[in-house]
Image 1 (cartoon, protein in one colour):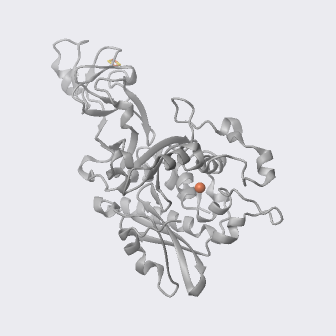
Image 2: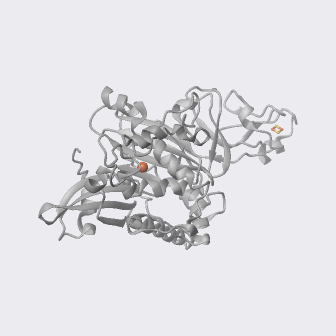
Image 3: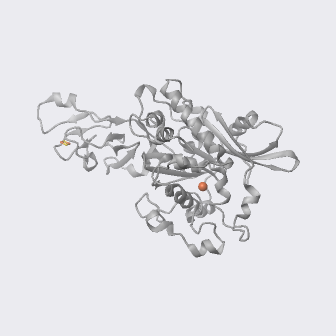
Amino acid sequence: MLSREDNELLCRVGPGTAMGEFMRRYWIPAAFSQQVEDNDGTPVRVKLLCENLVLFRDTQGRLGLLEEACPHRTASLYYGRNEESGLRCVYHGLKFDVDGKCTDAPCVPGDSNVLQRLKVKSYPVIERGDLVWAYMGPPEFKPEFPELEWTMLPASHRYVSRHVQECNWLQGLDGGFDASHLSFLHSGQVDMRKGRTDAHRRIIPTHYEVEPLDFGFACAGGREIEDGAIAWHVDVMLLPFHKIIPSVPKGAHVWAPIDDENTMLYSINFDEHKPLTEETLERELAWRGIHTENLPGSDYAIANKDNEYLIDRALQKSGRSYTGIKGLGVQDCVMQESMGPIADRTKENLLPCDAAIVKIRRLLLQSLREHQAGKPLRGMDPKGYRVRSARYTQSKDIPFAQTVEQHLRSGTLIAG
Ligand code: FES
Ligand SMILES: [Fe+2]
């Protein structure tokens, strides 16, 4: 459990909050590049960290991410005219360039003072890995873009989708590093006599480790196999909200907070060596993997809270599916959203299998304290993000902390 105060500290992401200011020191995904493909095309509404923004590509192909409210009388710039190197508010015609500078004020002809005085807040953006990313922190602290492997590959080597989770970002992150749920929530087989999964006996971890590293942490589940060896499955958490998964093909998640009660979950499959095969894409896009099938033209999954995620109780009873709910992504969503918009962690009763979650929250709280004390932040070195998740087996006499980083850096991925 967490105290009410600590829960608030970790969950709230608006301007001026501890977590909000911390997250603003990192690059945050804002939209798909494809949404703003055309110069002078339709602007896109974006909400990040409780701020309403509008993204557009100008005549020269430059991207601008501006506060949505026009600084004149706060009408929405989303309805604006994207023309001749700027976005023009259609209320009284003020025009702003990608840097937020007012470049034309036809409602006050000849008043150059207005041009100097009026500015709309703008944030730097960069395009990486099919996405547009924003930096919303103090300009003097803007880091280089992190060398996340999946963003550096040719487009054919990855598939990126997204959907809205109607809950706080930390419920998503907690779920992403919840090692023991895999053998229950995502299980397809039920042992009817014992009411638990077959997979449970095979793969539930007996060892949990969270090791702080420069970029965030390594979060591992291990189980003892023959000869006194431990088979480790190591997920990587990269600050402030990334996860790399040691699946085949590899996976990644980014939980980008829209506001305190909504999160845009980006889900990625990637292969560092070759384009994703037809077969992989077909399997992933049959919504059996980490992606969700969304309502047409929407970021909301077809299976959602309003239709009880299309739960099939007969299927659940039959034992062929543990949940009766289709798709890993939706299954995660159900549990995470069912805790409410912001989970009340004062009511939790954590168990030994939640060890990783406890450690991760502690590390995040520590990171917030370090940030507030003006200490250097972890994860500012772009090269630090060059890590892979890993699966490996090693003698239980070797301490986990001693070798984990070496494994993550060398990309020890074995099929399975
Ligand atoms: S409100 Fe935008 S120009 Fe007046
Ligand atoms: Fe899950």
